[in-house]
Image (cartoon, rainbow, N blue to C red):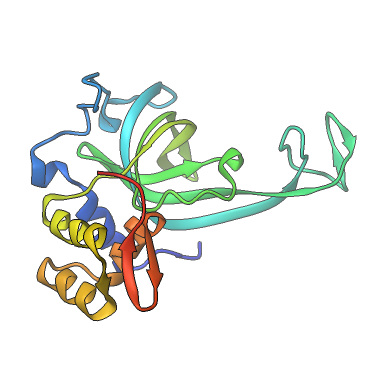
Length: 204
């Protein structure tokens, strides 16, 4: 298996485990509902859980039917016959919660989406595949983004007036985080204009 993630990605996962820094458990949802933990699930048992997603471990692509996403055989779908092939992919991330860490599988329904660095409310089940226990996601209910306490002053500066690359890297060094990890986590909320990084939208 080709390893796509690296040391920075694994470090990202550890930094995102905010329960170690805030005292909150992933069992406690933002709406007060109590979630099951991954370590409590039996093989094949479906549950709604809250997980942290780290680095991408593997990506498996195939040509499938645009209507049902089934794999094509000689250009034919078992149900829909001859169709125009679409490329789909299974993605495997390293992730978990405070009770279990391992591989989390996202099926072809999520082709094109990147969940690196996100905290998710998902529905899925534990499954043994290739002699390994994995959590297979069936549905993503909600995507969250958690700003850790030590990151808050940096985010506030990005909101107020922005930071140059040198200033941002200096602030991140003070909290032991690399620019690569920070951008992976908050890239959807940050833009760079004329050498200044600014927070444009998003969480917190």
